[in-house]
Image 1 (cartoon, rainbow, N blue to C red):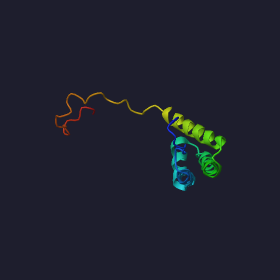
Image 2 (tube, helix red, strand yellow):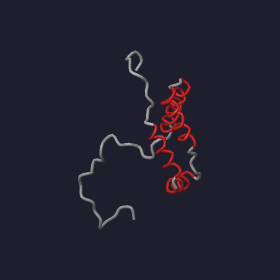
Image 3 (cartoon, rainbow, N blue to C red):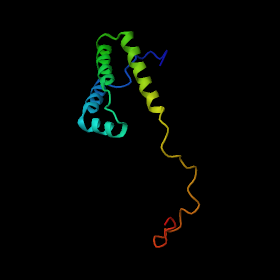
Length: 108
């Protein structure tokens, strides 16, 4: 974006940060996180990002801009650190087109 002459905008709309905060605080989401991860999620970053975004809309300070950029970069890096559960196949199995034999299961 450098040199294009367009003004910088936050990566998300400010209302998106607030919606994510409300979703994070919901009982269903908290239960899901506690069940899958063993701990309740910390939602304070979404709230801080919402207030920073509103500050950017009002005053357009460089501190708010850098805080939003850093927060989004940290969020993306956190999502990319998890390895996939299954290994993706390059091609289907050789016998994928054959009918399944339900009467003679080989695994039993």
